[in-house]
Length: 234
Image 1: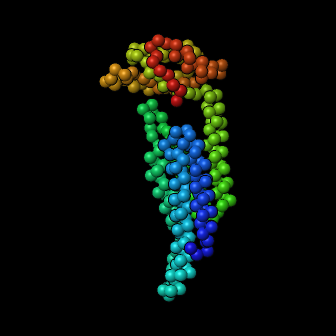
Image 2: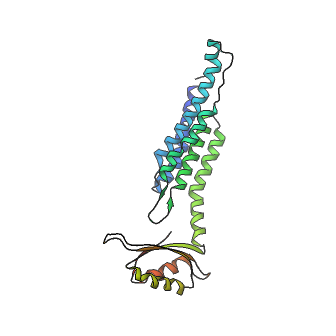
Image 3: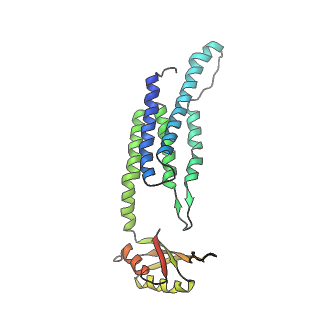
């Protein structure tokens, strides 16, 4: 390959494997849709794509153009990279789901795949410093910032609760219990039971907690009701 030795190729592909794998390990450990191998393949594929663009540009300017005698050749090494950034969307879309409890999950995984593809393009272009900085920032985001996010949300005054109960007539008891805690109800979304003995009616409550009430205190108070089958903070 013009201007690139075999060791340069191994270095770029190896760094792509390492960086993509490091990010993927964390996502795989958390049982996300895209894990170790997915991130690794995305990063390696992006690096190879960028190297292919560089290779074609070198071949046109240094080999094919002198031999063919063409006077005008339009070559843009960034075209392959642009297609990678656009094309990675189909993988990201496959990791985003909307659960039965109206939760959107997989956004962080999809964003990580996109960032991993961009990181692979940097590696393939030989921009090693930016690639390493990107890898460190991504690790810091998915590991450290996830804990910070949990810490902040655990102290938020606004919460959403998913509650399953035995009968729709029990909904008034649950609402009275919530208001008895000094909690304000913003919205209630009710779903009736399906035609199955294992399905119960459920509701999603949007609440604002008073200052002296923690999330655990409110959840425990509601869970004490006999009609409540399950409760979860969304």
